[in-house]
Length: 386
Image 1 (cartoon, rainbow, N blue to C red):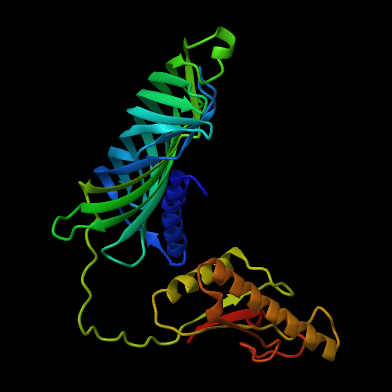
Image 2: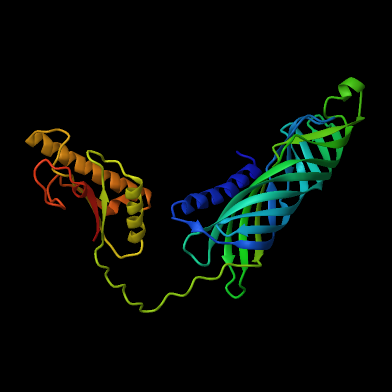
């Protein structure tokens, strides 16, 4: 059976992970938090069992802590594009439970307190719900763990040891953040938050200890109960926190304008067309041709249309003389020209699924000419909006 704290930690981790996977299925946009904001939150916190290295009179094991309390305050700046950065101060406190070891029965007392400063980068999402804005982020910083605790242990042979731990240890920290923001409609700029954080401190952490007793094998060497000074070293300091809080933006983005009731449907737009010309026997876009394609792409975003037709043509000359060979070559060249223009439209932001391409070779000339004539105006692609 898994230890209680690991099962609970897995439950805490699975909830935000599942929510994050669900949110990724939406086409999300940034929530425009902008300017200065402050935030505060508090709730419950739980440490996974920490691996303990051998200490005086005690065997290896795992420290188990009771669920405790956490409080966080932060000051941040929203960039207006979904990203924001903040500086936080944090505090966590929890009581000592016991040392987990199959050969020793233990009971703990006292508590540990952690506090520190972190810098976080976060991203807010707009999933189309005006009352809900998920966010996620990560942070790095520095923290301290202050421990004042005691431990009483008994082994099967009747030995007893009392250990007292104390001191403060500092090291770098990092964390992952997932939260939900709920704007308060009657206070502009105020949001309620619900948040999960995974936090850890690099180790191993070291605290001073004084142990008195005989369950760690010292009586076989020294002939009885004895006292040792040493260190209590722990690793795997993995913390999980669930919190509720408030965030206030001093310069909130204005709300979107309300929809216009019974707004008339936009009038249909007349079809528009653009001409792009090519050099003889070429399917490359000149700078002027790219400018015209870009103009067409911009116009497409401002008019009502359902399809864009891109048709390619050549003049009736051919780089491969011969009636049948020349017609086939010009047909393929016209399709290449239409394909190049479609690719340029897509680079300019037009969805390829709305564009149809056709090649007509040297048929349908813009200017009538004699046979085998190089005519610049017939070497073209026409863009037509439907």
